[in-house]
Image (cartoon, rainbow, N blue to C red; front, side, top):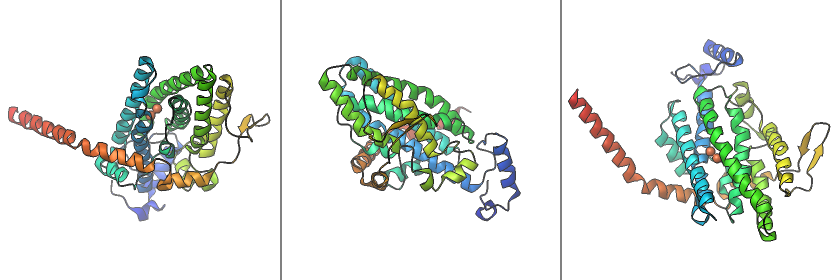
Length: 322
Ligand SMILES: [Fe+2]
Ligand SMILES: [Fe+2]
């Protein structure tokens, strides 16, 4: 595919054919022609998603050594490992768009790529492991269930597989929350404190409001996105509030109320100034997260070199044998 930005502006007949395929509900595959802008938007979205999976291992990895029982430790290790797998899977998907994973990783490490704002908040107590699984993975499921119908085939297929694991993550989180919520007063206070800290950042995970989301229009037209940020956020709130009530907890929102006419749980204003600060790199843990990724990347240098040498040796042997 030779990109031609001038033609992508709308003069190229291939654009009309491409858009007709999207309108007919067909999925776009790596070898199909696509507008350069579609490719770029997908690389941006998918690489941000992959980075988020990998950086998302850090806040929870922090608690593996302090899990309160062997069962909890095993579940948490499995979850964190799954997130690493999701990252690798989506990096592979992104490579089908003609970009090298190394390039994407460098963008993460040099701070030019974004990842989900949520992972820049600290994990202060064991209850955070429950609340992250429940709210953060729960928000990810709402987002990713819709992404499973995205127009780019490799991304859609990755989401179907990943959502199955995300459901396990959410359940293990909610189980921790439910256990603490019916525990001692101190345990209940600890889990309520975790909900208070994670509630608003979880709502911010869906991204800027539709009125302030520069990429949404195009992404919706090309069916990369199937629902707007605000629609997904509302769906998440509607699904979650009954779960909050079921375990006798509350969310830190004095404006929350049920609107019978629309059947929505209406919520108060989101602090977008906080969101923008975190996105700009000034959240509580941005520097710590990137430092941890850089350290891991440097420490893994010998593994990459060994794997490359091993692959070269095998290729040489199979060439000699042939
Ligand atoms: Fe994940
Ligand atoms: Fe997850």
